[in-house]
Length: 95
Image 1 (cartoon, rainbow, N blue to C red):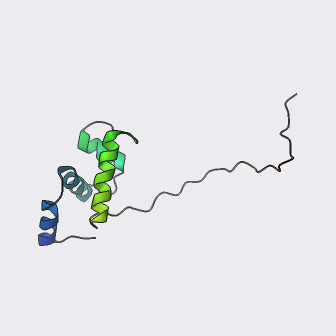
Image 2: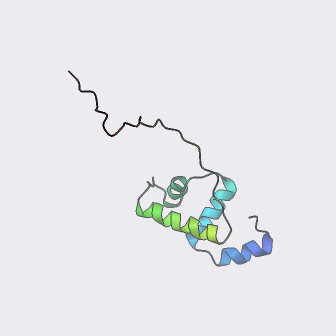
């Protein structure tokens, strides 16, 4: 969603300080992760699961509900699946 002049000013008035900071950051660097945003807000490394990370996550969710930010599609990751075994199949023992 692109917010124009007067509407953006009205929206910014109703936002918290972290939300305002996040908007300004995303204007300059449009593809930041939550951890990167948290690091910039708190001026130290912010890790997943920390209180700071949770606070930034809540701010982003609030901005998303208001239609101000949107999540970029996630990166596709691949992994190998372990082969399936039959119920009666024994695991080969090491001799």
